[in-house]
Image (cartoon, rainbow, N blue to C red; front, side):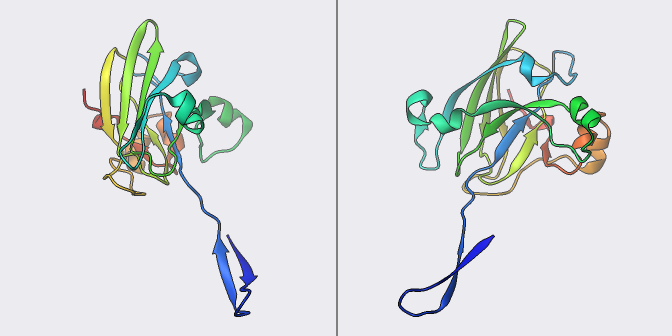
Length: 183
């Protein structure tokens, strides 16, 4: 959406566009058996954010309060009835900010701690990341090609989404495959 204005000295019209900065990364949580788990049953804590400059921020409460926005959200689906929304999976949502390169988060569930590192986070994309079965350990995933990019790597095709009863509701979304996780 643009706004028109008349320049002060020339009297010519110019268009000014508003800036959108950042997107969201929605993490779909699975239990030990690989079944989709409601994200509100998991305790999540953001441990670290890496900014485009390469600077790491570990004292997030002081430096980056806006990046601490971790919330449980209903997954966006292509169906909008109240019943469908109530059945939709709840995901953990992380704001990606303008060009955040890394998000490191610790999840705790049933006395197990899983540390996840999301690398090369696309700067303006809204996307989902499917998870491994919940297990103790540290895991990393590369979400984009690096640098400032809108591209999401490893997206599941509509046919692949159809194979999972829950994921097929996310057909219109970009969902990164759980096969991309590395220990």
